[in-house]
Image (cartoon, rainbow, N blue to C red; front, side, top):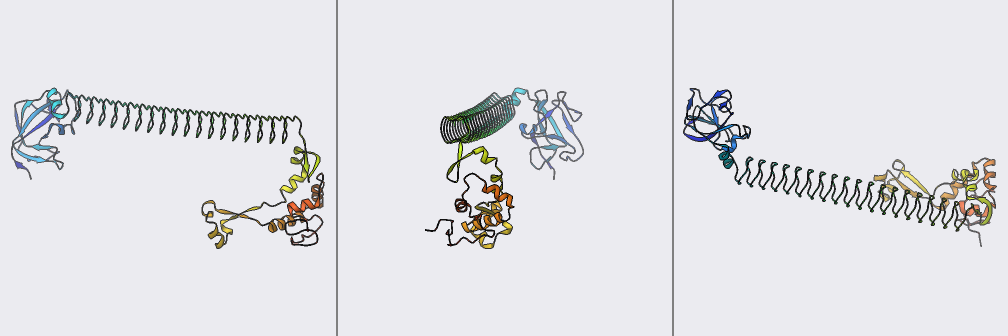
Amino acid sequence: MNEQKTVKGYKVFRPDWTCRGFQYQVGKSYEMDEEPIICERGYHFCTKLIDCYDYYDFDENNKVAEVTAYGKISIDENEKKSCTNKIKIEKAIDWTEVLNMVNVGKNCTGLSNSGDCNSGDYNSGDYNSGNHNSGDHNSGDHNSGDYNSGDYNSGYYNSGDHNSGYYNSGNHNSGDHNSGDHNSGDYNSGYYNSGYYNSGNHNSGYYNSGYYNSGDHNSGDHNSGYYNSGNHNSGYYNSGYYNSGNHNSGDHNSGDHNSGDYNSGYYNSGYYNSGDYNVTNYSSGCFNTELTKMFLFNKLSDWTRNDWKNSNAKWILDNTLVSPIDPIMEGDMTEKEKEEHPEYQTTGYYSKRLSWEEISNSNQKNWDKLSESSKKEVMSIPNFDKKIFKQITGIDVDKGVYNQIVCGEDYCSRGEEKK
């Protein structure tokens, strides 16, 4: 219901003193016969000058006047805007006075500032050209820290956004001096670093240009060690990959100073050396240049490690002998196995460790299925010894059908010679 009363207020006009195409003049009164209806008809105004700028641009070229409504009044539901059927344009308000009226702070050129010397709007801090800042000297918006040109920063001197740290040009940093994003460490140009001085990403270590390093000074990736240019190293100063040792240019070394691969010894340029200073492969000695002969069945043979590795016998045995670990899939597990091995819920299986009897039985059955030529190929291994072969594999090469491993004529349950 519209009430007849007198209300003081404020109204903003275009630079030519028009509003919605209607021409107004300071000092004159205007009336209409109709009932005023907010946002439909009537002369609109606000009782607080600052509320006018919810509906008009905060532009110093627009005209502002103090008004008196002396007819019937209609008020919107949020009580910020009113309209009347009778209004008088009392006097013009210059821009300096407008600024003093819409700001609580001093010397502000912006709107609704509680801080001082703000050219932006809605700042509680001081000297902000941006908006909605509680900090000081911000050109960006929504900053609680100081001297930010970016937005939503609680830290200082950030040109990026959403930083709680200082001097960040990147975004979402809790650390300082980051040009990258999502860093909790300092001086990172990469992303998601908790360490310092990283140009790569996802590093918890320092001075890394690679990715996912927990160690320091790595240009490679996934290193937990230091000064690695290769990847996946836990050791130091490696240019190769997957080294737990140090100063390796080769790969998969647990020893140090290797240019070859898979060495547990030191200073090897070859592969699979457990000894030191070798330029050959598979050496457990030192200072060797030639591939040495290997022991087979406890005796030195005329085979090298390469001969064994490339032999038909090795291929046959690799495809005949069973693994001591058998993965049992969830669908094949008994209820008791599920109860004893709850890890299957994550992996989809559990690893069953076979007994010696199960291994021996399976190996013997697989051996019995081999062709005679395959059996001869295995038994042609240099120094082949039936007793040693049975002790290690459970296979009795003299039996067509496997004799159960129990105490018998020659051996006990694990192939040990009967005393």
